[in-house]
Image 1 (cartoon, helix red, strand yellow):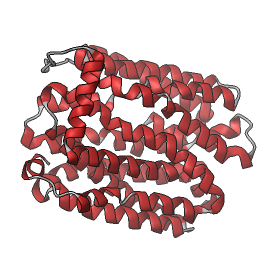
Image 2: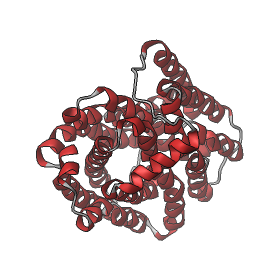
Image 3: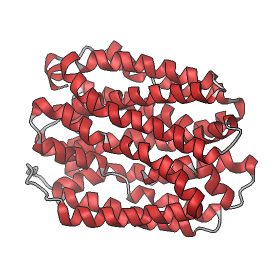
Image 4: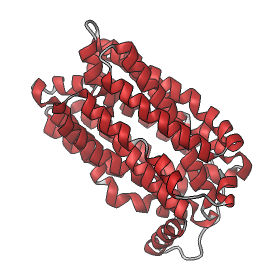
Length: 378
C-alpha cells in the first residue's frame, strides 16, 4: 500500500521538493530506478541467508528498514536527498521470495497455486487501498504527512511480524555456507529449462511494466480537468482492486486449465490492453485498459511463481525463490529509464514498448514444451 502511494503521488511529491515541471519525468526515472540498483547485487543473498539462519528475520528486516526510508522521504528537503534515501531500497527488498518459501513449506502441493494466489492478493490489495487512501491523506496532511503515515505502518508491521508470526521448521541444506548455497540455487535454476525461461519472461514483462507505471499518474493528470489527486487515487485503486480479486481466482483457475493455457491467453490480453491504454486520451478507456492489464498481470505472476515454487527442491526453496525477485529488480532499474527516455516521444510510444515486452511469457511457451511433471506442478 505504501509503495503504491509513493508511485501514485511521486509527481506531487517532487512538486513539493520544488522540481521544475519539465524535470519531473527525469527525477521520476532516477528515483524509481536507483533503489533497485543496490538490490541487484544483494538480491541473490536474502533467500540464501533465510535458508541458513531465519526466514522470519529476513522478512522483519524489510519492514524495519521500510520505516526508516519512508521517514527519510518525509523529511527530505531536496530531490537529491530523496534520491539518497531511495538508494537504501536495496536493503529492504528480497522478502517476497522468502515469504513464498514459508508458504510453500506449509501448503500441500496440490493447493500451492491457490495458496500463492491468496497470499499474492496482499500486494494488489495494497494497490487497491493505497492510492485512494493516499488521495485522502494528501488532501488532509499533504504528501509528507502521507509518507510519515506509511513509516508508522511499517513500524506496526514489524512489531506484528515479530510477535505474531511463528516460523515453522524447514528442511535445511547440508552445506550452509552462503556462497555454496547461492551456487546451488543458481545451478538448480539453470538445470530446469522451464524455470530459467520463466525468469527471462518475467524479467521482460517487468521491464515493460516499469516502463509505463511510474508515468501513469502524469497521464491521468493530463486527462483530468479537475481534481487530479483524487483521479489518480480512484484509477490506480480500481486497478489494484481488480488485481486483488483476480489473484486468488487465478489460483483456482490455473490447476483446472493448466499454466500453458492461462499464460497464453493472459499474455495476449495484457499486450492488447496496453495498446488500448496507450492510444487512449479519454480517462475511462485509459483506466479500463490498465484494469484489464492488471488482471492479466496477476495471472501471469501467479502461474509463473506457482510453477517455480512447485518445481524446486525443498531444501533450496528459500534460496531459489529468493531469486524470483531478480526480474523485478531488473525491471525496476531498466524500465523507468526506458520510460523516461521514451516519455518525450509520447504516450503511445511508452505504452507500445510495455505492450511488446508483456508478450514474453507467450514466447516462452512457444519455444519450450513443458514436461508433464511441470504441467502437473502448475
